Length: 336
Image (cartoon, rainbow, N blue to C red; front, side, top):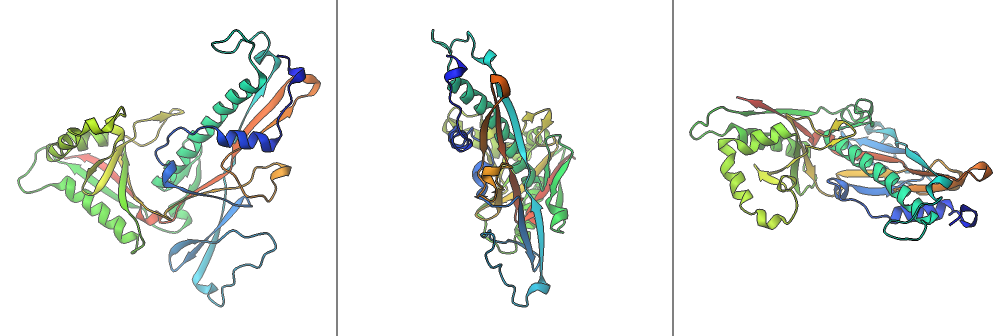
């Protein structure tokens, strides 16, 4: 099929198409509440030491009136990240290329769809990396070093750090591992200040996982849990949460883009529940999306000069937040 009879899609059509592409299952995606905003910044309010959110409103609408309460409030404005990636549809992608498993020549639409799926998958993983950053309290850029948002510094709270010591021998009537985990959970509960949550989870590195699940004080609980592996289906049992001390632990041994998601000897404990995790989406930086409500993904196709093909772009503009960063606990494993 020649590109001469290929009609490019509009940005709206491309955006609708890329938003309908299937999502790969992600660990934290279901935990975050998503909302589109009309601006590239989100106002976050501190009131009595608590983080609250200022509702999005139409431009020109009357702002919320504080009624003399302003002295007890502080507003911070946070910028959404701009995540964009591009590719090209060229004649070489189509010329003499047969569709997979077929004798027919490949269609431009199928090639565009494949390229868009790859771009969306990259953005999907990047957004999950931002969610992980919010769970840890510091959202990093793709290089793993540049800080986009330090939630502790931004909101003026102290991160809770605890140590879990794994003793060489198990003393009678003493379990310092369970004591440390329960103590960390209690600190997180206190930091929630009575606000609702459903339970606590922790994501941990490989060494922490091995030390926890192999220790004599924990092994019996872990083996009882493993005995139910027939309930896990085909999923890797390590990805199934092992609950101990009323905290559900998950191993995160993945390496993405050369970066370990969690340090080997670390674990990050966090609350789960409604209203705790937020992901805001700003509009794309295109004329047709100015001041519109942001979407999770955008896509467009622009024709190159002299019939050289089309430029493809997919982007997202998220702001990833934990509303209670003071309830995030960093655990460090130490051999006793």
